[in-house]
Amino acid sequence: MMKRVCVVGIQGLPPNYGGFETLVSELVNHKSKHIIYKVFCSLPAYTRRLSSFKGNILSYVNLNANGISSILYDVICMSRSFHSDAILILGTSGAIFIPVLRLFYSRKIIVNIDGAEWRRQKWSRGAQFYLRLSEMLAVYFSHTIIADNQAIVKYIEKRYRKRAVLIEYGGDQAFPVSNPEYFKEYCFADKPYAITICRIEPENNIDIILSIGGAEGILPIVIVGNWSASVYGKDLYRRYSNKEGIILLDAIYDIMRLNFLRSNACLYIHGHSAGGTNPSLVEAMNLGLPIVAFDCIYNRETTENACLYWSNSLDLLEQIRTSKDQLKSIGERMKEIAKRRYTWDRITRLYEKLY
Image (cartoon, rainbow, N blue to C red):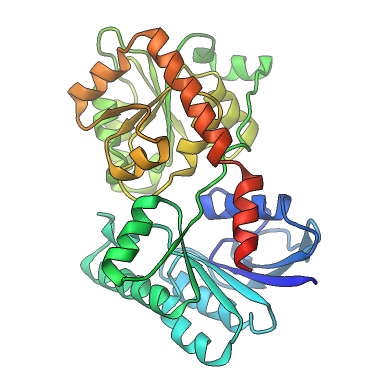
């Protein structure tokens, strides 16, 4: 029997930059024949308005899907989902409406809470209060809560005494690319380098990674991110853009170029300390890159305590200087974990069991 699933909480399809957009795109790519998605899209984000994407329905809302307007955006999307067999809500921006939704909607409401978002330093006290309230409402009034990391599952159980379902992210959309034209464009890529790909935010410890650039015995460090999106990013770019041993690149949305830079790197430095299972980390694992990750419970859960960990600049320097043989062994272990846990076929089947 055909099941209709509405998707709320993303900018839309085709996917732009963002973990949830990638998630929905891959759910569509790997879905079973009996599933049809209706994906709500932010009209201002698209110059071309498509009515469908790979046989699935697109519906537009004339609001931005990010920032303060995301609350109303999600509420409107939910209010247009009553005809579906299930509603998949990604994030908790509009969760204040979920108790109302439960009064009139008897089918399944499934929420991926996207980690403990309220803990991020970038939020004001008012925003943190709202995000904690939204999280609570999502947990208590949805039928199913999805957490992308075992640490988040434990957090939900401890804080709310509710059960969450563990479903992580896939990483097998990342694949090796070796294009002669890209070597011309990125002239550093024909020599060994380490890479980091992330949003430029304090929780991602970019300042620590930058501080070791140019140190003796250290590979050049390439960091790809949205440097101009915040005062924090602009300041770091000003201070480090001309420093030897550091290469700063603006955010790259071309998947071929991104895969080229990742797959030609010798090492992946992961600085995330908040959230849960990070897509860029599992993508690097899928490519078999040795991982040097910030030491927090989320990263240890994702890598099964099998990579190298750091908590300050001295730790990071020491770990990067690990022998090539040990790094190679870690890369092989990361790839084995990724092939076992972080494939989109597996992730899609787990989501579809909930519908």
